Structures are given as C-alpha cells and as structure tokens.
Length: 396
Picture (cartoon, rainbow, N blue to C red):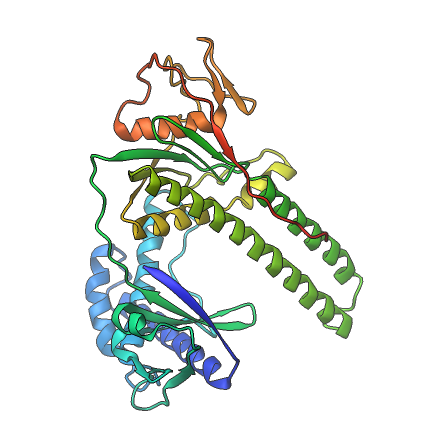
C-alpha cells in the first residue's frame, strides 16, 4: 500500500464529518456495554465475532455517513479490542479496552463511496448528507487513482486537514533463494545492516542533533510560557510558536528517517535481497532506568517508525520483511559463539574478535533467522561501511 497526501482548506463540513465519525465510535462503546451486560460481562476473543455481527445490525443507519464508513469505525473498534487482549496476554496489566469518548475521529471512505467527476473528487456521505467535494490539483494522476485507489481518509493533524489517498500496489515477492539481510535498529545509529558479506552503518548523528534541538526548544519556550498568565494573549502566542517550531523539527526528523530507509531499501534491491530481517524491540522501554538523560533518549527513540518505513518501502519492491526476537544478538560473538555484554561501541571478545557493536547485532540477527546463531565461524568480517546523512540544523 502507498499513500499520497493532499492538504485541504478548512471548512465547517470537515469538522462535521469527523465529528459524525466520532459519534459512531461512541455508539460502538454504548452497544458493546449493552452486549457485555446481557452476557454477564464474560470477556474473551470468541465473543467478539458474534458481538461484531450483532453490533453491525444495531448501529444507527441515520448517521450522515456512507454505510462503508460506518462499518470501518466498527472494524477499527474491534481491532483495538483485539490489541488490548494481546497486550493483556503478554503480561501488560495496565492495558485497557477502548473506552474513551471522542469528539473527532478520522473518517474513511472505501472504493464504493469514491467518485470522480472530471478533476473533482466526490466522497459520498450517504443519502441524508451532502458529499464532500474536493477539486484535485493538475498534477494528480486521475487514471492511476481510478484504477488503484483503495481508500481515502480525512485526517486532522495539528490544525491541518489532509486527505490520505491509499493505493494498492501489487508486486510479486522475490524468490527465497536470493539474499537475506539482518537489520539492527539502534538509538545512536537508526539502522545497521549485514547481508552476509558487507556491513553498512547508517549514521544517526544528524537525527540525534535534531532531537537535542527539539528538547532545547521545549525547555526554552516552557520557561517563557510559565512566566505568562494562562490563556493570556502572550501565552497563546508562545504556545503556537512553540508547536510550530516543534512541527518543523519533527518534519526534519521524519525526512531524515525517510532518506535513510529509502537508501537502505534501494541498496537491498540493487543487491537482490529477498528478505529483510529486523530485530523486534517491543517492550524495550519497560522497566528502564539508566538516568535522566539516557531515559529521555530511549523514550524518544523512533524504532517503531524505522521498522514501519522499511516495511512498506520494501514490500512495494517485492522484498519480504520479517521481525524476530533479537535476544542476545548484540552479546554473542560471531567468531566463537561466547556471550559478552559490550560496554563500549566496540565489541571485543576473549578470542580476539573485534567489531562494531551494532554490526555484531546485525550479523547475529541474520544468523538467528537462518538458524545458525552461536555457531563459530572461521572467516574474518569485512570492516563496516558508514553512510552519513548531511543536513543543516537551525538554532533554537
């Protein structure tokens, strides 16, 4: 799936549509409570399917939305319930089912509700409400959109409404006989890869500098805002300036991650890689306490975003993406198989093996996927190659 974004000029209709979608969500909460009460509050995944079918018949048809858009809200609600159960199953006792009321929520139109009239996009909201009409720019490829478009989403983000056009792109996966590359995602280096021959380090110095700048901006504006009367004219002025600057930095960070992931996926395509194996970092932030500064870095670590960017870009090129448990991959010596927890950026073993710590992680993630983690090897490793992302960072 690929996404194209189109910014919209604000109208009252946009607020009304997303507010209506939120009312459908609230209706799902009420209906689920009725179902639980009628069934003695028995919880379990087996009851979700009959509950979802029952709820589909009970949802109000008078909502000024297309029926497919209403069903998408219901599907999203039960997807959240499933995620809650998986978290509880994995030991997260703080996980809660969806229970919060929402004033606004993203609206989704499926293919049956999407029409094109010349260069005008028409999104149906049912018979009882006017459709949303959007004039498309001249560079918008209508032929491709009509053929491949899957869904359209109305997204509100930090004061801006945007239409997300989601396209379905099918490309056959490459043969498993081709290469496998292991990827170690790190806080200092966004990603380090090893394909069996070469180790590539994607330097994260520029992105880390942006995170430091972001923290300075928050601290600087925070001091000024604290000296103002809450909700005064100057208070609002500083709050708006603060979030405008933070959005600029966030866009720079995302741009850097995009550039690194694009270079990596293009490199995999050039080397005929069929499978990318990424270490699973789920839950790594739980129970951490390495001091104030290090904890801040770890909580700002965008490992989930890096995995997401690599996944959809690789799949668009027919490259399979696998996520595996990376336990002990950074501690196991590739040469002799002994384990040692490194304390510096360089991994050193008593057998004489020395290598970059993140490179060891990438090597062992690949070997773990192939089923040979811990098996000693006699061959020497080639020195890693670094790729640096250059950029200009503005002062706070």
